[in-house]
Length: 360
Ligand code: F6P
Image (cartoon, rainbow, N blue to C red; front, side):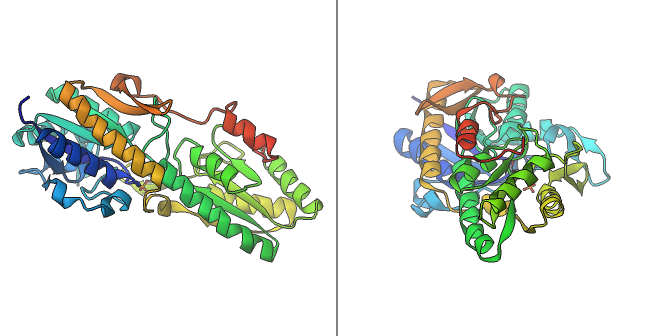
């Protein structure tokens, strides 16, 4: 087999497991096949530069600290879709041909992209337009990529949210307070649901299950009437107000992010129950933690398998995790789809069986 030259990039919000995955790609490509690997810096933005921003990747670079190290050594961007790139004068420009030209200038045989659903859709479109042999690897703390049970970074984010609940519980108990914890997850409630069960939340609010403040207050009042004077509420960032408004922050240049629902819920609980309430917004600490074992393993498995896919010429696919094994799914099957919480699934059922309220 001819010696290949592989490009790899990370795209979208960073998360735990990215470095471990880049390491696995490099080790298997170089040690297993004798190939060359070039890291592309800052996702597609790095390919817009002339020459492209790159970093040669060799096995020697990767001491074992990369298995746990947070962030991405390649850098990433989660703004600047090359098909509608924001220009300094406020306009949008299609810069996709520049990205493709950058890729071609590197003399690569294939590209591996580690990204969430949005990034993978953009990379696939670029690959189709430019005839680029492309393999995707799913990552996102939100765990909302379709066709895979787990994406890189999700398990670590859940661990961080559990630790936050573990730390809020004693201070809540000491001061007879209701603690509200707002967690990330974009339009999916996976982090809130799984951390809520594992961290002992009394109320879990997720975008997939409509709630009423009256029911949330009822739960808090019932806990207090039962003799426990504190409660833990975990809320996913995309939960809407009772009136159906999404709590968004405008970042300018057409960019918005979720934020603020924790304070909305906190104020309403205080008003309806008379309890003293404090609100914690967990934010980006969910992204920057050292990878937990599950993410180190998934990163290693995904990275090595992506090289198998390149070796076999199986492109326009994403490596995924299903039924305790890797599978390959066509990228067409994940574009414009989302893996949200099943309101009738086992996790929601389990939470209800434990007496956790969803405010419904
Ligand atoms: O998609 C990952 C994520 O962390 C979301 O959970 C969150 O809504 C968003 O990215 C935050 O984006 P940024 O890093 O641009 O603030």
